[in-house]
Structures are given as structure tokens and as C-alpha cells.
Image (tube, rainbow, N blue to C red; front, side, top):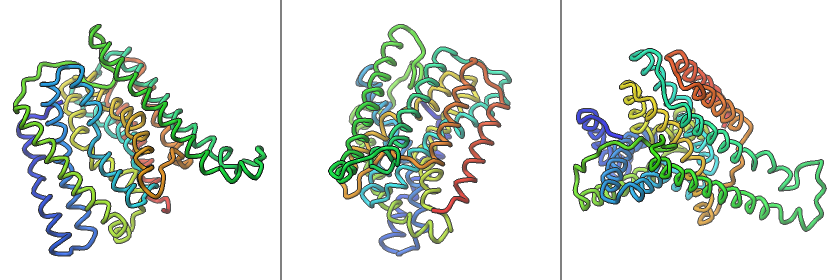
Length: 373
């Protein structure tokens, strides 16, 4: 996925906010709100650079290993942000960001793509078979993430219909964690199978499930240059993520926002805005297969890879991440998953469908905005 040169330069101009954010935090001792905003703006071009460097390295590694690298680092920025949030004990913010990323891709990104593409090109068509596979995977991913939430009360002994003896009740926390770890292993295995199917589909000239269709790509950087850019951009994201998470609590208090709203709306946008723009750009060019692959594929990567990986990373910290979501998150995920799947099932799209998805995202966002912490 590539921007044109002017678009890329415009985004990379935001790199100026990296030293400003560090200066504001460590030298000028700015309040949390400007520090949070500066760090967020700096992460956007850094995430784009990680994507560019990954794409360049993939060119040298060959289709299979390059595709695997893209699949692994596709949401690197958000993964790093959430790791620092886990370290800070902000588990609810992490869970909210997982849900927010999926909602953003299925409603905001897909909606903008359909709206912009429909206004520019009228009725658009795409590979119905590939879109249906994506849609089925999204619904399956939702169900896999919802099951722990449905059964959590029974597992920890809070369901009045299930009687636990004293030893079982005492071990409730251990069973709850074991349950989440088991689900995480299954999700990662499913993601691996999905990637494997993608490669097999490419060999048979089928449309990929989670990645872009193959296109001619000529390396602009040397392998060494790509590695250096990847390393430096990742280091920059680490620095800015630490700064961002450190300022979240103070910034949300000063702005009158809940950390839950920041996690479910703002954090997902920060790490993925560059990729979101690509999906809209290619829809404008009437390449709907690629646009849908980006929006659905990123959702699957979050639910099947990033979320379970965070479960195991959380074991390194004092508070463990459980894949147990509140009813508001589950309802939003269910609605988004089934509506996005319905939009994809007929192989055609128009701007009105995009407007409806955007309206739903705005309604959900407004609901989370007024929801107390």
C-alpha cells in the first residue's frame, strides 16, 4: 500500500512533533494535554514509516516471508502503545482500544471508503467470494472474543445457576486466566491458518483474505536502509507511546474525557490513521477489493493476533489482560461485525451504504462519549 509522494511528505512533516513532544515533557514541563496531543501527532508519521520500511523489507524477503512480515508488523504502532498501557496498569484502556480498532476499521474506514468511492465512481463492485470469507472471519473473530465474556461469570463462580465448592471458588482467578490463555492460543492458531490460506490463495490466483492483491513493487530503499528506518521508527514509537500513556490520565481529566473513550476512539485512530487513508485512497481509485482487504484485514489482525498476543505480554506485568469485555463493547462489536458482513455479501457497494456505516460509528462514538468512566 503506497501513498503518492506529496501525501507521504505531508504525513512525514508531522515528525517535527517528536522532538517537540520530548522537549515539552522533559524540558518545558508542559501540561499533560499538549504533551498527549504532541505525542499522538508524532506517532502518526512514525507508524507510516514502519509500514513503508516493512514493505521495503518484504520486497527483499520474497512473497511468503515478506507477507508474513507484513502480517506481523501491520499494527505495530498500536501494539506498542497498548504494551505501555499494560505496563501502566491501564487494562481497561487496552481492552477499549482493541474494540475501538475493530469498530474503526469496520465502520469508520469501510464507511469512508464506500462513501468516497461511491461518490467518485457510482456503484462499485468487488470480489464477492473474498469479501464473504473476510466477513465470515470477522463474525467468527467476534464470537471467539465474546465467548470469554459470556462465560466469565460462571468461570469465576458468580453465576447463581452454578454451585462451586470452596476450593473451586478459591481458584476462580486461576481458571479465569487459564480460560483467556486458551482462547488466545486458539485465536493465534486461527490467524496463522488465515495467513496460510492467504498465501495458498495467491498461488491459485485467488484474492487474498487479509492482505492486498499482489502488485508490482520496486524497492526504493536498500535492505540496510529499510532496517535502519524500521529500527529508528520503532524506537520513536516506543518513546512517543511511553509519553502518550504517561499523559493519558492527566489529559483525560483536564479535557473531561473518560479513559474508556480515549481508548475506544482516539488511540485506535492514532496508530492506524495512515493505513486508513490508504483504504480511502484506493476506494477513490475504484480498487474496492484492496480497500475492503485493508479494512477487514486490519480488523482480523487486531482480533486474532494483537489481542491474544497482548494477553501473553500482560503476564509480564502486575495486572493480567483478560478477554472479558463489557456489554456495551460486545453490543457494538456485534452490530459492527454483522452490518459490515451484510454490506460485503452482495459484491456491490454504493455511497449510501458508506454513509450508513459512518452514521452508526458516530452514534456509537457519541454513546461512548457520554458513558461515565
